[in-house]
Length: 226
Image (cartoon, rainbow, N blue to C red):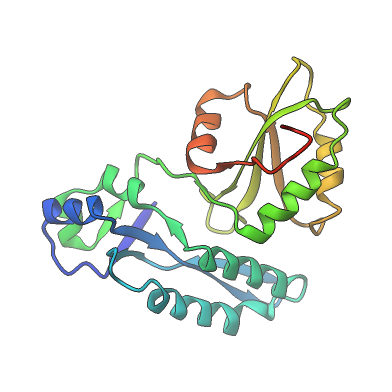
């Protein structure tokens, strides 16, 4: 995966790292292109945004492209367009760690970086989707799914034509099989059926779970879990 780099005014790697330490980030914004029978998900270059810069001036361009070209997918174009907008509204996709892990002085001068080591695979879920996930999880029958902790995120490390999707990691009080169907049934009460969820037992895949815990967030608002 190659990221084009944008808005870098100084091609000195050490100086750039100091800016990151001071709060600068590399951000991707997404947008949709609807072409009748297909919908393409596209991303901006990795835009370097310093702490004092206004992120709105960068996201505005890609929101405009999204709303102009996104809805023209005849099946669910408006829904996918709105999903892309929500990602941008939530601050875009932070790829700072991925870029710094792979960035060299040569890449910086060339204006692009080849991502060979991936760190960030998740982004935070926006507030409205998080609220609906909480409502769905609160409907869980604890006799069927004895929930202890829940972590949620949006998986963004997808192929070019694949949709980002929700990931829900569940820690159980008991060592039993996780009834994913029961959880999905409750999620379908608040989300359209085309919305994809990956639901898994957080104790079954340590590396994947560690990234989810680090890059996503724990749901603390679930009364019947706590």
